[in-house]
Length: 137
Image 1: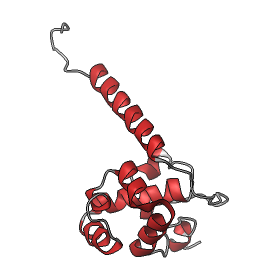
Image 2: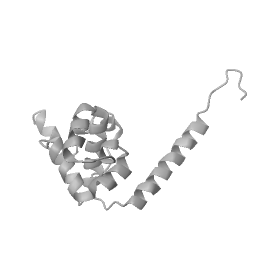
Image 3: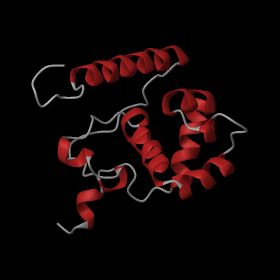
């Protein structure tokens, strides 16, 4: 097995960013993409061309879109800890995992997810507050 063969199960393998974006927009639309990913390129005067221009210049946003493509649109199981640290295009998808139909997403489910994430973030911040070397707060 060559080095390139280990990436063949990754749905991003051989797929251009333009194809990824076009598939996402045609299936979900800009409003759902904006709600789930909170990227301005999907909120204001959204178009494939302007979004592509932004995503090609902004690697963190491109990785966010590509991860969404893998785990929402292709419904793959979340990456393990080792792969999670890698950009989506570099992640190894084990053989035998089949792509499933895209997840059904709504604006309501995006809001529920946003609340859930905010709650977890607040809890994490409260539990990892500043430590005092003298042992009291």
